Length: 497
Image 1 (tube, one colour):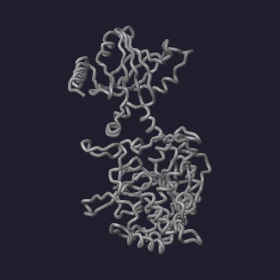
Image 2: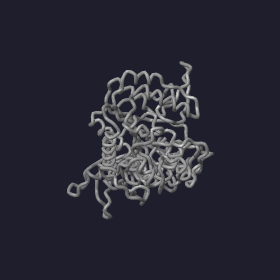
Image 3: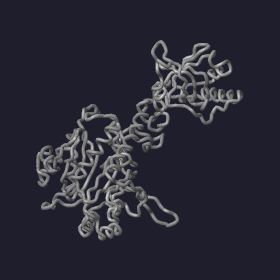
Image 4: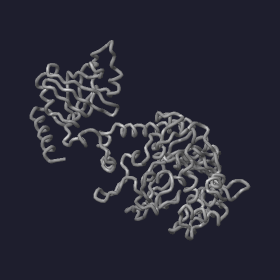
């Protein structure tokens, strides 16, 4: 934007002040949303007075009259300014208006010859003078990096972006209503932890000056929510912000939102039923039915969803048994996976991600995972090599993760010790959590669902940045292409983190 345009608009703001008008307005009572104004219109009662407020998106002047398109967050409406209706002094304000300004108007609702519902203004109020014009001649903002960096402009310029975030709010509200109706209690747990626990991820580290201790931004709330089960809160959930100091891609943002819930006296089968209910409530709130479009594909989300074991899917798509180390290694190499000195179970998981996950288009519960991949999960009765865990996949993307929770404190300690021995970084046992388990935690099912990815699915957005209002970006002078993984070697691996 040239300085000239800025100066011209600044001069108009000063002119408004000279006329005794505050260019940054004040409270504006009595206005209805533009969507409501459209509903109010009735041909049998044409001319009904209404008041609206919004941003000018188009301006067509015709001497003693002008047509404006005014937008609020519910829609757009045409406004007709006429000198004879407003009077000379009020109409003079029209010459000081620009696209991007925010105004309030009051007048009768009519339908023009072209069929456009229009407010014939009897009164106009300047509420905010915009000193900078909207982007790209006001026809929409298309540069992806600018859209994400200046979301406030993106929301103004692109109606679909506003609708996406309105749907996100509706989805979250619907999830809360569903869980509240199931007898769950919404809780809040700490976001700064003394230990980085609850998931295998690289944490962000901060420091508390008064206590002189390092703390970790939450990578998962799991162990705190389980403490509440111990305390007798039998159905709890949290819609929480998690932080993982890892890669950025179309599926991963270092700061992301997740739903996590726990239900006493349930198991992973119960979590499957709850998952289907959550998705159904969210889909209804987003205005989609049993079939939705995502990434150019039609996806059937009608219940019941497919339920397939990890083992059978691995054999079907990888072409070998996951227990055959030589065959798995050969298959991994054929997929371009670097095997090196990786433990066998991690190679199995790499093959699963490459060969199986892309084939899971319609919602699928993949259940009964290898126990070494599930340190917090109860083993399957009679088959200790398998853990009672499932993940939800839709369109090849992981959407949720659930367990029959491990509540044996001796076994949990042993699993934690094994996990620490194989970790790249030194860690500590969460002795307080183990102490809590020793008090007795009831058998339970636990579930986590990535909210950002769920919103992506239900709004047909392929990038996680399109559903997070302010995604993390590099400084403006070192940006890369949108969606590029900034460090593929440490890219996050679940639910948006």
